[in-house]
Length: 223
Image (tube, rainbow, N blue to C red):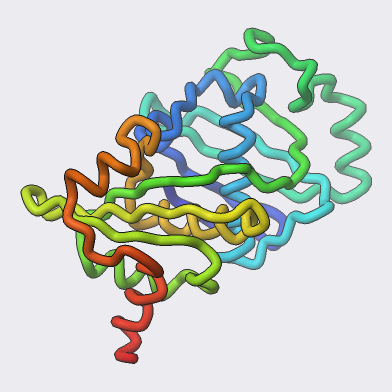
């Protein structure tokens, strides 16, 4: 995934097909706003806030999902002023709501515009695969509060790939979502239920059992 700041009121995300597949999201889900698509939107908003101070709390926003190619979709997030919001509400009848059913307005070749209330997703545990130690060290430096999420580091001795296991208590979901967004810049999100934490611990060598992000941050800082 990539992010660009277009202006103080607009950011753009580039999301590949593989990014969507790792999260189990189909392109058509952006049209009717599945829970998985909305969770990704909220994760991206936290990423934009961290990277560009693009704060969208309690602000009406519009998200345009535009298929760019067979392997990439572009999301453009815009803050709306009162006049734009009024015009939008007059001209758009479709919103991301529980009453909007799958199968409606799902043509993936059309731009889809939705208003989304910024809320925090409810992930509990995620697993990222990261190829290089240097990427791990760079990632750790970007985490603002590494001790607020649980993190363990494993390594596949055959392939040399690192596996970063992240989890968080329910009262730290916003911080946890931000950490996920930052980590997505460096690694590939995997399916934890598919592997299972016990499988990870048994198959891969445990490098750092606890506070992996904090220890990696200290390692790069020389403390």
